[in-house]
Picture: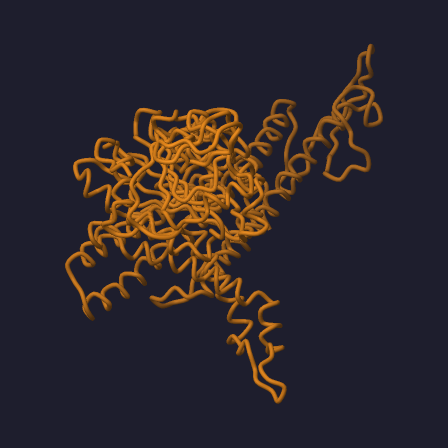
Amino acid sequence: MLTWQQLRDAKFTEYEDAADGWSAVSNRADAARARVDRDMAAPLRATQQGEALTSAERDLTRLGRNYQYIHSECGLVRTTLNAVASELAAVQKKLKQALDDAAGLGFTVHEDGSVEYPRSTELPGSPGAASGTGDAKPGAPVPFLPGAGEAGGDPNKGKAEDIAERISQAVNSAIAIDSRYAGTLRKLKAPDGLTVTDDMIMDEARDTGEVQKAVGAYLGKNGIPDGKSPADNKKWWESLTEEQREEYQTLYPAEIGALDGLPSAVRDSSNRIVLDEARAQVQQKLDALGPEPAKTIYTAAGAVRNPEWTVWEAMGGSKYRGQLDGMKAIQARFDRTGVDDLPPAYLLGFDLKGNGHVILANGNPDTADNTAVYVPGTKSKLAGARGDIGRMQEIWDASHQLSPGKSTATITWIGYDAPQSIVPEAMEKHWAYEGAPKLNNFLDGLQTVQGGPDASHTTVIGHSYGSTTVGAASKAPGHLAADDIVVAGSPGMLVGDANDLDVGNDHVWSLAARNDAVPLGGKVAGLGGYKWDVETWHGLPYNAGYVQTVPSDEAFGAHRMAVDTSGHSGYWKEDSTSLQNQAAVVTGRYNQVVDP
């Protein structure tokens, strides 16, 4: 049992010193994970192939996952130790204040925590005389407050009982704190072996939740900005000590990873923890459903839907499999670092909310000379992220080849809830208006971290309904933090003229394949804008009045670029003019854009 003497003499800096040791291990593990990915795996992929590469990649992937796990678990131990030191130090301070008060009054504190005091019969306004001593213990039937006229006319008794109660509360609080944190620390352990399993990752997620509950008073989630501007987020982050930043990263990775205005390396480190835990959780749920049954069975009456498949589907089978496909696509991009000079990837956003979201960068946008943010359209979600991630790899490659002396970062931004059907969802505007503030916040965050509007040349690329979201963002209060807008297969941008967009008509660029029906469909849905004008086709007038326009119309006033690809999704075909035109805008080489 803890005594007040032990609490008084305890040196909680020893906990803090131990926390520093765990912090060092956590930080080294995170740095080692980054080196495995960028300095070891990347050169291997660039120089090796075949079974040698496959074997080495397998080992490096395991090593990187081990480092990721060490980073998170050791970070939790560090935070727990710092929290217990902080809470016990606060209790110790209260104890010492009570002891100081006793000493100042000439009272004696005994080993059992009772307080000996000189009796006094002094009453207000009259002389009193000491008469022996009394012994005050905690747990008085009424809460005596120091002062004359209390405790049966003995002010010393009230003061002594107050001090005894404070001593007792400090000791009991310390015992409770010690017990609570001891239980939390006992859970922060890992089994032997070199393989980090999904069960271990799931246990890590539970550990995080337990530590969050245990250290709430020390490092609560309410300390993280919510709904603030990227500039405010950055100011908050910079106000923290390095140790506080590290603690927030490992204890609240989802919240820190989603915070616009923070450095990309910080968001990437946090979001990788979230990704690992989500992947383990979803895989566990899918495994619990068992193998996917045949969708169709054949009976005497013919082919019918298999009831077992219907149950499997209703329990989330396809949803979980799609989420895993999206997460595998993210990992596949991580694994391509170094291939064809592809730079490291940064996971700037990730969650499973709704249809799932992912924001993934090729290269570090914080230091990039050129930045491109791609906003996909209808049916975009985590499950289908592979294609959207691939498109931004193509943009990066084309931009890098066009401007090798400049650094470029290209970002796949599936950061909003896109419509998931052509009819009726893609005919509705609310998806764009709801996504616009999220896009603006992300772009503001990039610009904030980069150092201002002149630090990087930024292009927003909107495909299909994604261009409608870009249009809504440009219409929103404030200013779209971009230099250029490129739209491909746009159904409309909710404005009638390119000059209505924040970047001005000279910086709006449009791609539309001849057999892409989406621009016409967008007019049917009313996603364009209206203006009084004369509509022309290659300069020849064919309509006049209050007309609805989309970016591929001459009347819209955007730069119409040459397209040599087919269909609604071919604009990113390797070595195509369609792709090269986008790269020319991304790198600011406007004179190399090919006109139609």
